[in-house]
Length: 280
Length: 264
Image 1: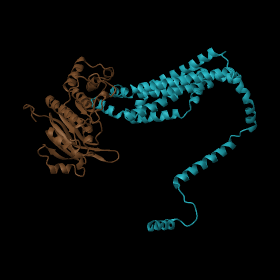
Image 2: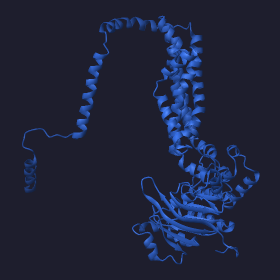
Image 3: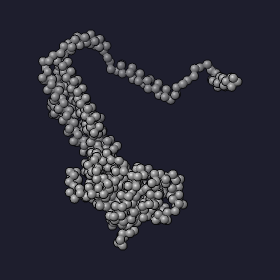
């Protein structure tokens, strides 16, 4: 018992004798977290004042909401045909945009990837060029093409091609850089050309990866193209936007349902394909 | 050294070869090496000594920063794109990680050895000649892979993959084969099969061979000449009899444990 007495005495004597609670947190992390929450709260408060929300409008809107909801619970099949064809053209817009972008980005990605670029500076040029394209939001691209081509699906396709291509090039180039080195060495060492490296070496290795990236992007483009209809790119988005404008909520409900079912089915399908292709 | 009295011609002449990486490390520091036709040379040395940089400089998979390389009368370091392709098509290479295309058939992988002799379009569309296909099947059969010809390359075991790699190199009808740690990822039994395949076929075809190994015992079994590399310099160049224990310890100084890894 002598020993435990000694320990007790030592423990007591080693405690700071100030009566404060013992701190347990990692100081630097704690400071960081406090700083983060401090800045976010400050930004939030400043933003609330900056945006000048008219609270009376909000209250009025809230009063109207039950009426709109009750209108939306009535579903009308009157526009079923045109909604279906709208959805189809939305899908077609996305599909064409993805296919055209794939063809362009397939070649561009080999120019951009560090380990396949024939010229370092060409690679850097395209990399930055595509970064600029990516930093302009998709609706802006569509509005630009609407302005030059007029309303309709063509504007949607052209508008989607820019962001889709730059997305695909970035994704493909990353895959080439990650998985390509052994294959590139193998084909170069036998005296193969740049085209041999790409078609005989890299393409078979990267094929499944490319397909699954394409699937992901197609899904994204369908989402985008629904929204883009609203800014004039044709398809179902255009119909939805006109129903909202003329308060035809019963038609709107059917439209939303069609969009929901299509995208949900699409996601299931693409997941299924991805699992099948990776299982080989 | 026993090429039936044939006069041995110089095949590869490396003078003052330097490779300095952009971070300043010198992987190769003034390497001088002359290789005659049909020689079977094993390069030994601890990891990081520069063995791999040396092999990759010879066919310019990495760009040397100084010195000259002459392959069978042609300057390698000055070669333009077309000349370099021609040089590479006559130098086979075998890799530690096999570097096969996993998704393609074994036969296609072996036929890749002919790409150096084909134009871009013919290569892309698999227009290999029937003679080439027969030749490829013959090599695969000779190396005991006759039942794997139409399998996907990634279905094979490590030892089988490396033998496919050897077939691809032989398919080039090369004058020189560079083998970069060909058995480092293999078990002892497969290692013997792979080393035998490289050795006997090179002998038979009169192909000179440069093999990187870190196992001294295997080096002594096969080599007609051994080169020891340490910190980017040649510190030994002689026959396996001349490679004394004290010399070995000098080469592996500080990394002695690597001599005994995976010996047969």
